[in-house]
Image (cartoon, rainbow, N blue to C red; front, side):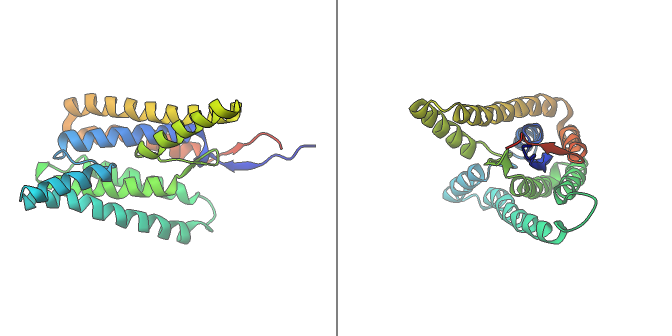
Length: 225
């Protein structure tokens, strides 16, 4: 009888898709109502940081520097949480990460414009937790809070499929393109909702995060080998 390999739902297309929707949503939210700062796209923040330094606007430069620094701290903390929680029974350690992310995102909804710097830092922190903790879909490296790496992988796999005719490569490429599309969809809804609800819009990002939290109580079965 073929063996069945079980793996965490954290690597499923469903969980990855929900997280990518959240990533796009929060990027649109932070840019539109939190001072045009990207919660996820630290490359964008670094470019804007350089521009502000060139223009001599040190106050604005700090606004872009802080999320970059906090993002790096979030990556460090994600690894620390994995080390501390991986052997714990009950909840999967990635569920703890999601619980932290939901709590922090919830709190940002109640911070006014005077605290945009804090809201952006909080969102950057949890986005770092997310991107570091959820790094694969079906065993393939991916990012749930940005698109550049996914776009590179999608195009590379499409080329390799054209060269070899291997349908597996085409399927993998399709998953990456799906993630990019869903990021756009998340940003689209983030833009619509933020224009209506302003700071409270971040509360809607809790929906896909909570769904991921619930889904991860079960395991996904991989096809037999």
